[in-house]
Length: 125
Image 1 (cartoon, rainbow, N blue to C red):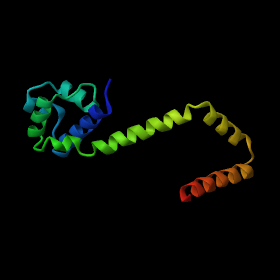
Image 2 (cartoon, helix red, strand yellow):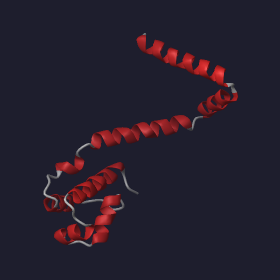
Image 3 (spheres, one colour):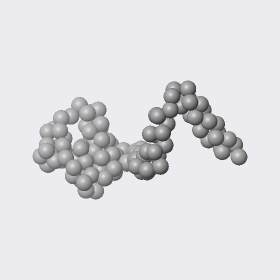
Image 4 (cartoon, one colour):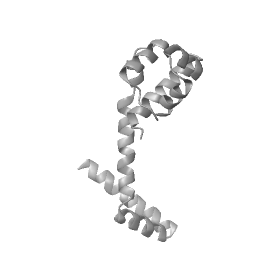
């Protein structure tokens, strides 16, 4: 199973390859692998070893660090999405959402305004 790091490296690999106007086949030929392997790297199905990453960086005329640019942000976004998914799987959250949508439009709007004001008041304290 691909990790977020594998996916990030694959996206960066695809972006750089396309930027240079290379096909997967052309890149594969330069580093001595089959184009299917490049496909697997780009979609994160296969991990890129350090030695292969070095070869790919040289073929794509970029430093190895290029592949890791922005990885912290990608990992933080993934963690935040995971936290939101966990929050929405709680019974109390689902009960609250269900009760909210059983209200009429005006009471819903008032409840939302109240919740927002409580959040704002909590930040000021």
